[in-house]
Length: 486
Image 1 (spheres, rainbow, N blue to C red):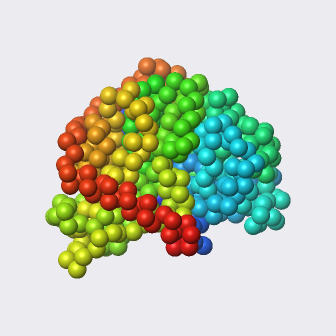
Image 2 (image 1 turned 135 degrees about the vertical axis):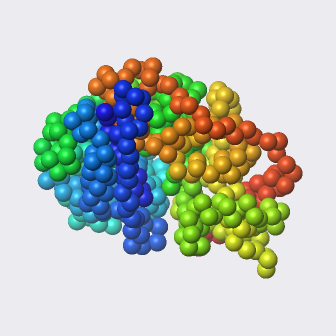
Image 3 (image 1 turned 180 degrees about the horizontal axis):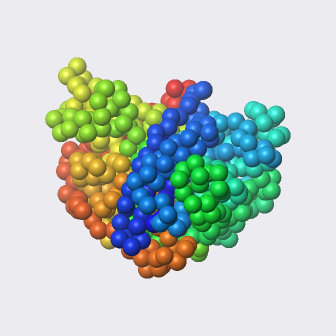
């Protein structure tokens, strides 16, 4: 039995995966909140991660024979700046992946390191870790002076579990400090971003064992002390592992709080003009391209909160709308990365009428997620031609209507993977199983069974018209937000 821990933005998920049965034996999650103390800020207290992780672990361990657990793998939200002093104590709340406070520092970093987009895999954007250290130096010099360690969120959980500072290739890839081609930290990129390389942890492959479960944590959770813990990966990479996307040409879409379009590549292939991320995969020598949408399926959850229902209700409402009369939604609640690289843009509804009702808003939000994925697909150019289809993972995949709409908007054949919602947590468990030789490389590359296929229909005139209005809406509103901060 192997445990996979995924530190998400809205929850920590834990799965127990049985190597003997090749199946998830148990899973649980514990929710957590995000703080926004100022406009554009997004933070979490690392202590809340530990509490949520502890709760989810205890729930899963209570449902299995804990003596059978042979290894643990880690996964988590990427880019977060978890700042520790010499005693490994957090100095402030973690600055998260969807935080936009370091926009000005990104411009400075681009000027200091003109080749950063090709070396680090993407142009500087405020969600990444490096410009956050520059902001810290400018805005909180007292905290900056105490920094002794910088960890990614999942690696802070790792520190709690096994006591070591360590990270993996894929999570390191999302910092702007990693030389993607070499797979190690770049001293020059660190210098350009006011970062001491000694603050950064060693970089491992995701299957490498980086520590053993501490006795006090084991006793609290109900596990055996000394269980090996593998480095794991950032949630994009572990999500890829969960669907066997480890070899060139394999790809998938992920619909969680954020959204990704992911394609494995033979080597480092930067495409910075379209803000396509070119990153090191968690497995040694592997690479990928990824379009990252900050908002993913989150707009559905937002609308459910506004309406006082749940996402299932919103999707059902969308089926009652007349698409020709529905407004157009721009789903950029926290800015956007791919393909715009625009931290200033915000959401909007365009084309409201006196007759607009709840179903029309629901349809507009569902459509906006599909159109964002279509923009991401187009940003890849011809490289997606190598993928015969894309698997779909994440909580948003529960909606047939959304997946069908994405298939139509992108022109891509989609397959909803079995156990699609386990996603990155399952990938983390598989990495641990491979690291401890419980499974082979071939098993790691196996695609899961597809429960449902979604075939793209020929684009209707209405779909083309609405998609162009969606894109025109961004072009019209972007200058307004950039000029006036609206």
